[in-house]
Image (cartoon, rainbow, N blue to C red):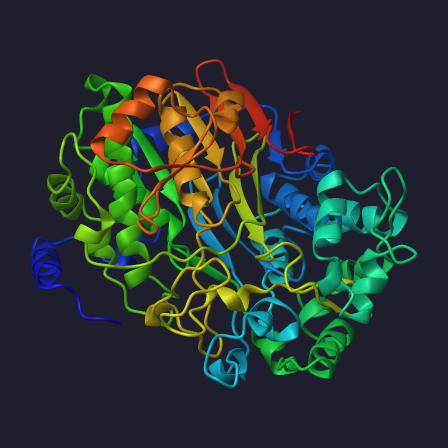
Length: 574
């Protein structure tokens, strides 16, 4: 890791001498008034918002059978593995923030993928020393050891009410009996057709008579059904040992990969302390490293907390939000990585005193060029991720963001398993200071090592207030962070679930030094004022697929909504 600038060392020393909380002190946040209010109340009904109606219905089916939010999460995630493989699946991983109603326990579940023991950065270089993008993105070398199956078994064992077998039943049934693929899945298969055809098992799974599955036709996935059945019957060992593990390793090694059965057997789910930050009477509970998202959201909110944004016109409110984004993204990649491998100055980054200093560097009516701040570059873990949010009748909550990284991950299916592998190895800084597929750089804090977890922007979050609570998250690569931030701000401003997921978005990530904007996000006056301040506004197509559940404690009403930008999503209250 590069040395800290002198002013940061001085500030860090000051914070430590002032007695700031250590990472160990944040294991479970102390009781807060809003949390106590939530714990004392039960909604009496459940709500789920996910990216696919079949997954939402699977979760509600499990809840109707006596399951809780955590059982429903198993059903939703496993069903998404079948019906939305372009975004997540058994060959990928997830991050989740949950709150258990019975005792108020809040925890972060880290089921992120890890590098295999035989990882070697030379495998991702061409003969001339330049990055080999194909090895990093396609085929078995691009795949980390999956975490999702272990994570689902962990949720069922430690937090669920039902046997794992019962919660996985909807996914098994869907894969075995078939379903009609939606336009997003058909489009993803067509988009990655050339890569899929490189691998016989991938072509056999995703093509029907040499073509992507047709609209309105049933599509079955018997190999994945069998894999999920073994997970259901044997727990995590059904995937990480025995028949499935042998098939995974044999397929990977036959195609030039480097997995071993020991890699699979050694995989462990991690429980970590979530990040908690107070903002305008709400407590935001969000993802810690190896996610960069929660740290960035907390840093932004700490900066904004010292600005009387309600007294500003819209352009100047947006100005302060963008400048807070710029500074948070400046920090997040330099310092963050897998906490089991990298020592991080979280006390500094999460401190309100540190935010005070950053706020003082913001000019009230002028953009700060990123070139005037110490240089850095943010990493983008890819746009093709998925998120779902759940609150059950007892008030249990869970926010889950799951991914295989790029569209259809590595495009490599391990023969005989139906498992599509991720391409998360590209989320490491495989070649320091060389761009990944998105043209962005990485740092040594995120360099690959055996068993290490790659940095992510996934930001599953809970927003807990005395009157209202929200479960929120989204896919979208580096834009996940700003989407979740803008969703949190909208919720605190009083918007309902439908308005939150539908609101138009803007994004700044330090470099490139521009503000990405959805069409129509700013009116003409706001656009003109931002440009006068020195911002470059960069139009781009709509992004993200946010799924939100809200709980109004005043009338004990749940609401759920899925992003209208894409078809197939469903937010549903039962």
